[in-house]
Image 1 (tube, helix red, strand yellow):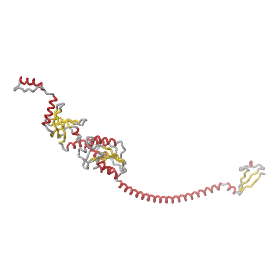
Image 2 (cartoon, one colour; image 1 turned 120 degrees about the vertical axis):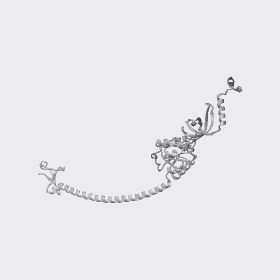
Image 3 (cartoon, rainbow, N blue to C red; image 1 turned 45 degrees about the vertical axis):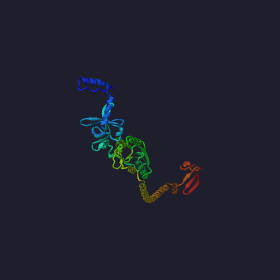
Image 4 (tube, one colour; image 1 turned 180 degrees about the horizontal axis):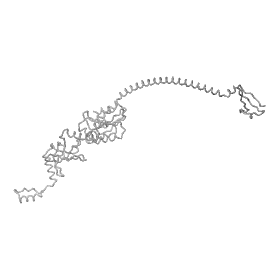
Length: 391
């Protein structure tokens, strides 16, 4: 580059001469933006700035781009994923405080703020606003309706648990289930319950459980800050919980913590241990109840047996009387029939002085033509037979 030429005092031709002579030392655009960036970053340290969000966009990379404006000016802002992954996304029109480093985006020469912290200046803060927005969407779809809550099975055989495999929540659940209802099979589906990957991890775990034969599901984790629990305030996670085919118990954080998952679940438990207690019957109580039922059943069987014996005795008496009456009636009928048969008997006819003639083959001879002279026959009378011959 040429050496810069000091312009002469005044203007006119001297100024034109300076302009013509200084082209040899002209800077490139990149040199200007780099120098401007260095100057701005050196002269303006990171600072808090207040303004209104405008033109907010969240890119697939996780970076946020928006403008911060007031009545007189606006500044472009960027907040990278490593700074915003714990935050719910703001919306246009929201009044916020940002802690940012002023700088120049060299490629485009744009003055911008590189944001590292973002706080809502509105009542409840950024977290509260995001929570209420998601809650309203769930309520609109009827997912918070108490009528859709399902009853827990009284004696579950398989209990699924979505939580961190390294957390105290899992150990608490295992201890309570093992003590109260060891017959149940615990199916542990590990998930990341904190951090920028927690939302996707929990949804993936829930999707895996949908295909398993499970009686009840516990979604839980221990206590923490609102940032630690935020994955369970995700509308996506809440909808996944509401769509599970089996009853769901939500046990997120401490008793004072209420998340969207708590609201859409079939039952909210204040702690993971309480969730395990709600999901299982107490073995000792069941044994006592079974003993009481056994006593009641034995007493009922004794009473029923006594009633059966009494009924059998009464039935036997009625049967005996019925059989005696039936036999008496049958004897009377038999006597009457015997009398009728006796009256119709040929022997009765013979007793009145009649006789029956039969030939040697036993054929009854009823006509004179059957008795030619010299024919032998037998004559049946009332007290026997005599032989005879026709003459």
